[in-house]
Each structure stands twice: as C-alpha cells, then as structure tokens.
Length: 69
Image: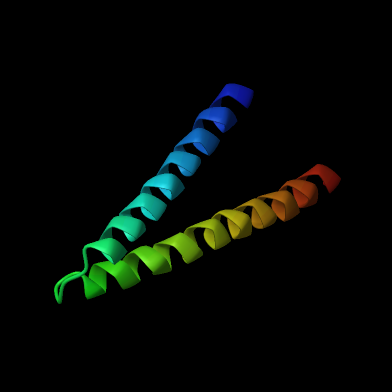
C-alpha cells in the first residue's frame, strides 16, 4: 500500500511539473493559436491540486465513517 501511494504521488508531481513547464513554454512562444492552450494549462494547474485535496478530504471522512461502524 505504501509503495502504491509513493508511485501515485510521484506521478502527480511529474504531472504538475509537466503542466508548469508547458505553461511556461506556451507563455514564452505565444501566437494567436496558443491562447486557448495557455488558459487550459493555467486552469489545469489550479484545478488539479484542488481536486487532489478534495479527494483526500472525502477519503478521510469516508474512512472515519467506516471505522466507526
């Protein structure tokens, strides 16, 4: 279980780093066509950590509910 969590967290970190790098590259080499990609990268950069936090919070609440039964 612990090894699986480490792998998932490493994948999440790599995904976030790739989002940051992609956002930086799109911001530097901007054209008319890259505007949508830039905003998609910004949205994913903000929403991905929020979703991960929400999943962890829900998991903790549900886990505590099941432990009480």
